[in-house]
Length: 111
Image 1 (cartoon, one colour):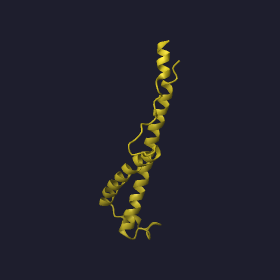
Image 2 (spheres, rainbow, N blue to C red; image 1 turned 30 degrees about the vertical axis):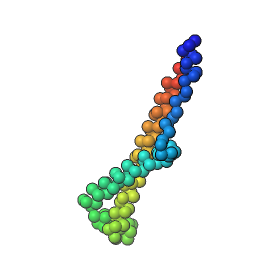
Image 3 (cartoon, rainbow, N blue to C red; image 1 turned 135 degrees about the horizontal axis):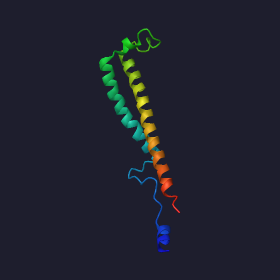
Image 4 (spheres, helix red, strand yellow; image 1 turned 120 degrees about the horizontal axis):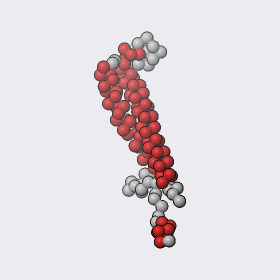
């Protein structure tokens, strides 16, 4: 009996602890995904364009007029890398959040 009473008085665990910054969970998730993906895209852009010239890559394609300038080619490449690293980070965050929620629901269904 006493075990049941103590279980009822224990407060439920909150899904996320309060933060001192006051950011909402969505704002934190966006920052968690966008900032590392931005840094990764910057590094990927530096390494990729150290080897390949964007003007040479666009030559003879539909993008030839768009990447006639080196800076335009660098910008397009950066945003391309940023989009893919953002998708990767968002997928990782989604899988982490759903795995935590799924494992938490199994442990709370004890008789």
